[in-house]
Length: 377
Image 1: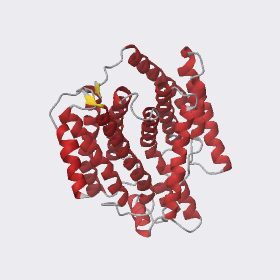
Image 2: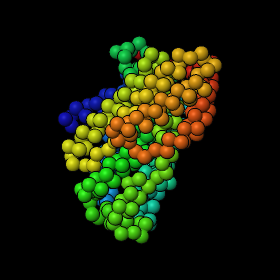
Image 3: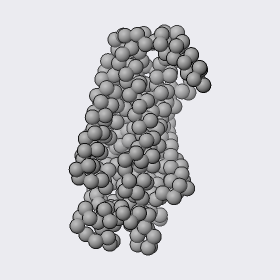
Image 4: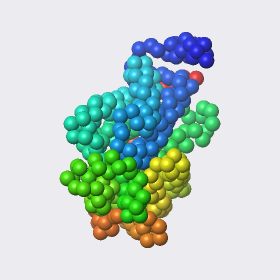
């Protein structure tokens, strides 16, 4: 095993480790390895994130928690890729590289800030704390660079023809997962509060006592509700609908398949079902799976059938109508987080404005395409 690794480093990696500027002519196999490496890093990140929320609804222990360790594996792979892109100039143009450098750099800087925050103020019981939001923002900026790089540089006509579109769809999935992640708090919280009401709380007593002490309250239903569902009820539908709609709209514009948005939304729901099964098998708290987001995918796919001039406003109307109806329906027939359904005007306006921005950016990209990295055989 060690000999094989040494041989790989000597004959495959070392010849490539030479200084170069971004946009350097890159062998097609190297491009493939680099961008599949990014997919691997993001897969570790998504798996760790899915476990992390369940972990923090059961345990108060935070340092060296297994979900963080899994996330760290993805971060290490990402750092290695950025260093390789930066030093060699292979596989990325200057703009894509800057996004990944700034995003991952800010993520790494925020980690010690988050540790200091925990040391001074105790454990954050919300995914929406300042340092947590900065972590998501760093990941978001990094992923913009990776997606741009994939669109511009992933080699065409090499290997299996399905890898390029499927990989781009996977990146859209990971982007959607990253933006949705903060609102998983409500999806776990609604079931955790129900478990308390049934006399079988999922959280360990130490965590419940800590959550109650943060608001100067005894361990009772009010404390558990504040811990589980302490966010405003408008936040869940507004953030989820807006982020999902715009990510799917961008994916639809670049992948062009008839039901691309629905497939990506369905893949996300399938992933959540899989993670739910794994977490409950490991005796971690369950969560509500957002089946309703599939309706958002359908709305985006239908919107792109409209005349181009009507797409932003028509898409916003379809996303708002389908999304709120599906969210209400899931809550009526099964379970869903508390959601202020009267928040729909904000989603309608924000989605329309965001969609106009998407159409402008995509049109500008097609009118003035960036020069891809030259590919060598």
